[in-house]
Image 1 (cartoon, rainbow, N blue to C red):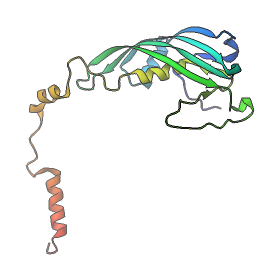
Image 2 (cartoon, rainbow, N blue to C red; image 1 turned 135 degrees about the vertical axis):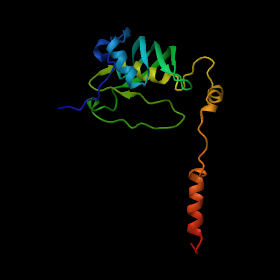
Image 3 (tube, rainbow, N blue to C red; image 1 turned 45 degrees about the horizontal axis):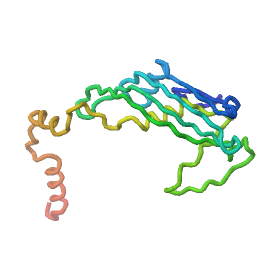
Image 4 (tube, rainbow, N blue to C red; image 1 turned 90 degrees about the horizontal axis):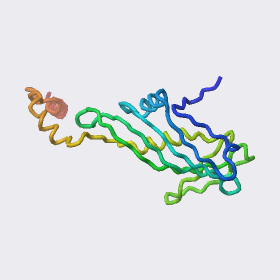
Length: 190
């Protein structure tokens, strides 16, 4: 029994399918995949997701260069009003993968990490790259983390709801209670 992590959008590409001249692929998420991705990415909905992908062999076939573009239409909740905000996203894909350092290549390769260096290539396991996962990861990076409806601002929203705040507590609130406790604890005659 395996505990595999479910992949919402999977398009596996086996290295043997790439060819010496590379491969050009068009991929599109179906309705079920878009619903699963929307849940994973905390979206109201994901109306479309397509990608044009170019896969090329480099360095005698030990490195795979994936480039391309993705297009998506997403609906998120406005961070101010919670109303739906629909956005069209266009992003660029670029990833490197390698067979070096994997158990299949017969060993591990030492990788030097530096904050200024480019990301090292990801390992290829079972001679397969999941292009759907590459697209989903890039989509996650392209999504606006703080979507807002046009014209929505925190100032306007807080001004509109300012009269809705309840009256302050008559006993002075939690800080007054803490001050009383601290005062009695500090007073040796209490």
